[in-house]
Length: 471
Image 1 (cartoon, rainbow, N blue to C red):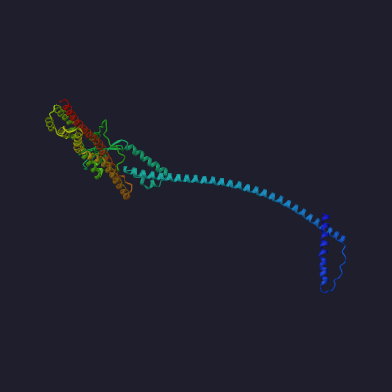
Image 2: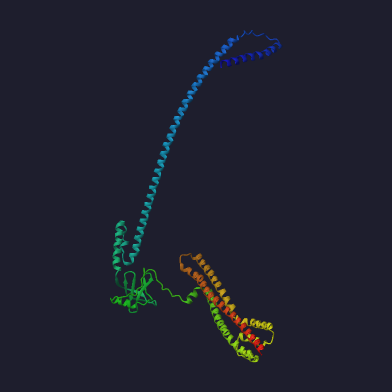
């Protein structure tokens, strides 16, 4: 390093001498100025030694500074590492404390929730207890228990109030759980109110006995009683005389505050009435279809019964060659078959193709008579369920109108529309199914009769042809 420093010093001196020469030359060319004092000659060796000594001094100073800085950096790094480890330990400790506080918070929250639940349970129990007291008051009041409204009872502790309520309830059960008799009034079946004796079977049944009439009693509303429609006068008289019968005709009820109405038995007219106007229309179509089915049945029955008789009677004449007798025999019969066979007999002399066309034309002419009422029956079978669907839609519209106006609180208000919706569908299907069934059966029967007429006419033709060949 010293050698390098020497080279640098020498280069600097030479560089200064080289660039100093032109400067000196320039100074010589400039206007004359006062000459500076002469510079003493420089000893190059001494200058190099002085520079080298200064460099070594400065180098030693910088080296000492470097060692001091390295020592301070090492101390700083050690101190910062220690501080970092301390902070990390402190962070871990704080995290542990936070987790512990969080767990404690959750535990406290659970305790608070449990306490709130217990408090709600206490409130519910209190509400239930008050409702029990109110219910007991309303239940026992009709039996003359007035203590539950006294100030002493209302101001007493809950335990004492419960004991009082249960005491009166047990005493009441002992009283109403037996058969006892008391005077009172009740209504007969015609609505007349009479005075008499009421024999009570606990709190679930009662009988009335009076000279005007009696029997098993049912609630009429507002604590009043009425005679039920089922006869039980003998039972009431026996109980009033103190001779309980072996078998009781009894009517059980829950309470006497709500009237019990007798349900009217369903009849065909009541069902149809519940279907409204559309229901009666469907019933009218059903009656019409029934009449048409009966008429068509007897008409086809007569037509099918005469076919074989006509063929046998006319055929015997044709085989004998008596065409006029065959025509006369046809006139003795009435109906489609006689007319078709008569048309065949009158044209026996024609060729077979022409004769078959005449028979087909005659059968087509008679088809309108054989198909009588068939289309109407099938139309009724198709229209009836559509009317039932119309009634269903009408009933649902009525039901929704009632819901819109009155809500759904009273189901009886909705029963009218629902009855129309369901009964009309039932009536429509009840008319359509048998009408469709009998209509198709009778149509098939009519087609069978047409086939029989065609076969009969062809049989007469064949018998005539056979007679011609044998003649």
